[in-house]
Length: 219
Image (cartoon, rainbow, N blue to C red; front, side, top):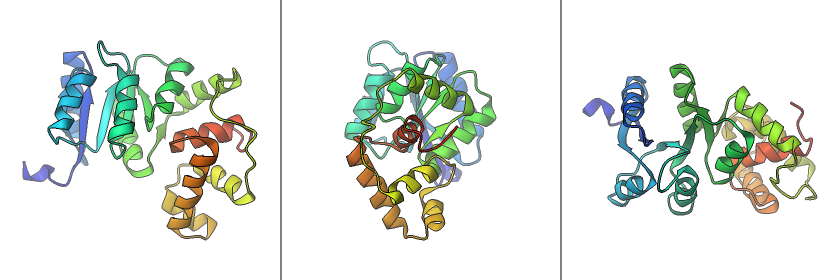
């Protein structure tokens, strides 16, 4: 399949065979993506990856028997942080969403989403390193309003760090944020990494949640 060489490789992990097969066919219909392989749970995914089958993105079901989505996302973050995880679920409660994001998922999408949204989510995760729909963002805000613990809100931030956090909550890429702040992309990466350390976070989604919880941006 020479036309797939330059396509973005997506692995589908879900314990329901019919849904898994349907998702693979749908992903293959997207211009920039190809279904690289599929697996029924976290254990099978680990076997594939250990055989050097490394996808760019994993569309990961949250609730699976055996090694579930939470455990799989955590294992991936610790061992293959370059692989981007897009969580997939029928559940939209804020605790599940926030827990998956804290485990390292770059985004969260419902199984009831339209095909166009899945393609958008995959594109956003690949290009911008995160994806949250308005519906999921609302759920997160609901969780934060219930005092879900995201980070230490007593951290002292510089003006530049606060400005950076505001831009992080937009749909701009890090390169575009650098242009808005009139600094180099390397400087933006420094801001990001310093905030990861200072706030004990590990993803852009975590930064967005922190900014919302602490009133740095209004939604």
